[in-house]
Image (cartoon, rainbow over all chains, first blue to last red; front, side, top):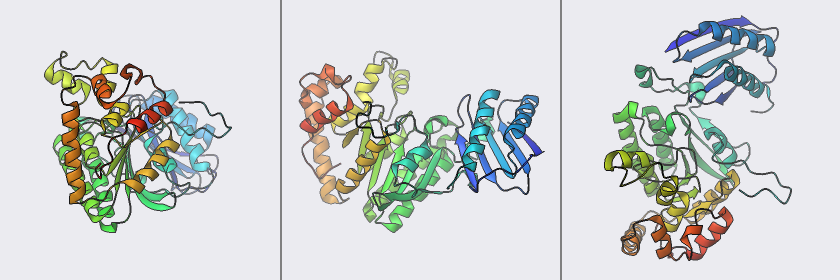
Length: 105
Length: 307
């Protein structure tokens, strides 16, 4: 297993008040993203656990793009990867932020 | 599945839904609360040894909520994570829920099965988990809690999951639901393709599928593949599931003996259906859910105080 961790400062704090949300499933070509509103200010952290070794550069590019597009300030995103492609990862990250920004619990 | 004709929203497919969505949508809106949710990160201590990815909830969602106003416990397996298989943590979460049901004694438990059985990477602890869950189901039932199994997921209900299903107070199954102990590939591997051809999907479904289980009497209700249909079935089964006592066990034994007498010589599901009173068994696999439910109700099984 490879574990990767990226810290960013987003442009602004994520909307909404839900404390956490989860999307996806750990299956072949898929992943789960657990998102928690636990960081101060516009800090953002992404932690990845993947069985596919050697793709740190791709992860870094996908995460950087995600932080720019979605501005997930205040959020910690934890990923259990099942060998997902970069586009699937982008989709799940966007879904996770969308879900935690929704109203209600 | 029939398209909606009266303008109401269509209930989502049970088969297509994720475990957490099944649990949430099955219960009254806004009442589901999870125990040991994904944020607790209670994950398998074994999968890392095999360099396999873990899941934050170890493939099972447990919690409580209300069903038509009645407080219930609920557990939902995620069939897409390692085939919904039982590992140490996965099993322990279900055992904990059932022991809570035993102690409370009045709250029914809904188990949303979606499992291939024991997770091979956690073989020993997985097998122990199955034994502990079966004991916990019986203890909960003895204390007065009804334990209802709902089967209609991707992985079916196989291996130890099939054994646990056999200990429940009542079962509801959909067309997609399959209930058995040894799965098709397992039988073929051990006994040869002449005994069971796992590639023959029609054979698989008429041996283990939802319609067969309903006609054989292994499942109390057959339901369409929607969350609303499973919800209605769960409400109905909580209402009518028998108490756990000596009279029920005797009735159950009598029912199984009768079943063996009636169907023991049948070589195929088609023979069983014919014997059960279906005029044209060949039509059963292609029959829409509503037609099949009407047929099953007509044939029924004698009313016993058995499951």
